[in-house]
Length: 49
Image (cartoon, rainbow, N blue to C red; front, side):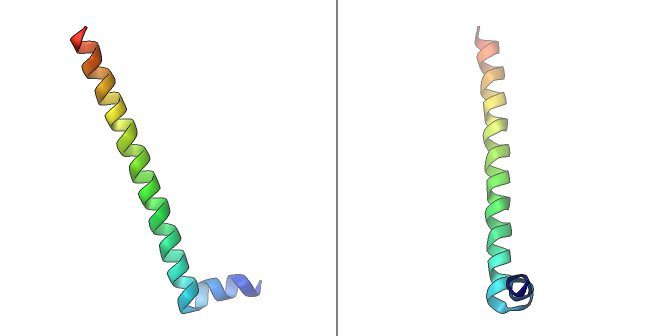
């Protein structure tokens, strides 16, 4: 319980939460980016046939 209190109240804990949120956000963006380009590539490959 003390660790959670430190995570949400101390400067280091809040910075850790910010970094975790940033990393998760970048991960979501990269997955969506890759899936979009995979779909686009598949659609263009179908048109070339």
